[in-house]
Length: 262
Ligand code: BJW
View (tube, rainbow, N blue to C red):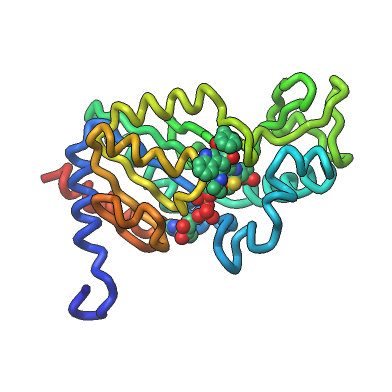
């Protein structure tokens, strides 16, 4: 505890995480909706503001829901990408982009494995981003699987007919759907070679992402959680810093800067 304000003292974990990043050779950072919260995008499981507090995931985020009511699901994802397009990356996204650059100059590698579909890591400048739950910025035909970027999809009618006789759906991974093969392969490759794993802004409840930490632990990587609230992995990580990632990540970068300069 901090002796002055009686809040939990975050300085020690921040220093520790920075020193581990300083020494790491290969870093994997798993991110979730919490990292985009400070950009103004709702998370899923917040009891009051979360998307699943207002909408039923089984009515919106499954293929059965889309087949039942494609208009409703298409309108919902249209609203979601409009929100995502209108917000900006926050200091948490920027800190990770900066970290990747900094590690690259020392010949170290870093992979962001994100569950987010909003494209904010890339807009902040992160280069190596694996989107395990797909992206809302591409849509595909339900009949042929042919993909299109958002600006080539016309949202004049809902649902959106594809030119091949199917419907256009977002390239996101719904419950019960397999994760993209290539993204999973890249993720496991990064996990099997990492010596430091950070879980940032995720409730660590959706599989298989929630079990990536086990792969990292199995190869002997140190594990870290940065999240506003405690989660099921808080007890097993080597170090946890609880608070907004848009504040904690820049603080870690500051500490790292001092270590790199010393
Ligand atoms: C902050 C903050 C701030 C707030 N700073 N932090 C094994 C066991 C049990 C079930 C399964 C299993 N394996 C597979 C399953 C089934 C299922 C599953 O996991 N179900 C669980 C819910 C139990 N998984 C699947 O179906 C997956 N497919 C699959 O495994 O295929 C094979 C298979 C099929 C069937 C059976 C078995 C195997 C696919 C999962 C797809 C998830 N899709 C969604 C929607 C994507 C599209 C869209 O965006 O609409 O992905 S659901 C939703 O949850 C979204 C997210 O990516 C995902 C994770 O949520 P996330 O990011 O963690 O957000 P929150 O809201 O949960 O948490 C936010 C956190 O941030 C909180 O902790 C806050 O405290 C924190 N926070 N502000 C820092 N400022």
